[in-house]
Image (tube, rainbow, N blue to C red):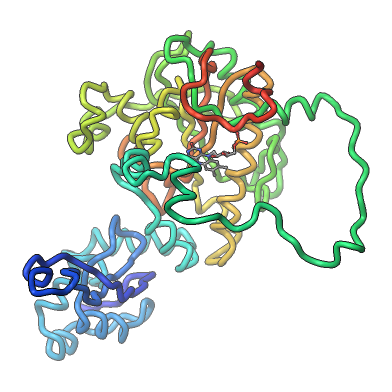
Length: 405
Ligand SMILES: Cc1cc2nc3c(=O)[nH]c(=O)nc-3n(C[C@H](O)[C@H](O)[C@H](O)COP(=O)(O)O)c2cc1C
């Protein structure tokens, strides 16, 4: 057999700490820390704990050149080599290792930049009740944040010579100003009122539909949309969790930007509810309710939206052009920023509440929609629905445009 290292690998010397009561009783802090190696391979679902000898072995191998396994086994021990193969950190050339080798090869074919892939994989959440954690830490309010962290960096940035300042004329107000001013992140959805399908359809059309098409070359068509996209490649797909839309069966859907249609997707309740037992707040929720709640990290004020649009780029659509490029992942994220602003303004024009969040449980969403984080993993969610009549959760609307007095 021959082996090589997996395509991308980052070795992290992480300080890990645990508490020992005996040490506390002996008069010290009780906190014992040590440095532990973690191997980040972005095609895996989590980093792998390894020891210093594993790190040395992995660091000596090429990700491209295959070398015979026998000398490695002789030098480092057969068990060590086998463990690294089983973990997916080493790739083997023989039949027993075909499945992880194919994953590694497929990963190579996505043209990720190594550091971007590592960041992408390492920033995923799985079953995190972020809202609960923030509340417990007292960081839900401005006062709580100020108390915990002290004053934030100043609101305004001073630079250059103030005396040389050029005062600019104020623009004439137009309908666009009214629309921009009326947008406010909605944290108060009407939990009784369904969203009419026509309104959902209008927002989807403006945010995600093709508004034209250009034939660039053979087998290379590009879409024109209301938002810009790096390389005109429009890699972002929209998947919907629809719970309460008038005229649409509750369930999961994929939006088709050329047909302007919603394609139903299967709902695997067992996969969706995989983490439900961990959360007391989620007891009694059905699969779609739980998915909405865990999707937005336990933020009930966002889960209440009757529709959640999960935005997930097909990375290789962008990386096909920007191969192994250090900025390509940034471009995918920026694309989503543009799409979400178009979504929010389209919703605002209809008087609907909307939001965007990146505080999402990517792994739960990937299980629900059958996605793979390094192929088409989600980056953000936009929610949509009718606003409630009273504000229970804070919204930033100092000029009372979203919430008339
Ligand atoms: C990328 C992004 C992520 C956000 N994530 C959250 C979130 O997880 N929870 C939340 O309550 N608001 C979230 N927001 C909304 C911001 O808190 C909000 O934009 C900010 O308070 C300003 O208020 P405005 O949108 O009403 O102008 C997010 C906004 C952006 C752009």
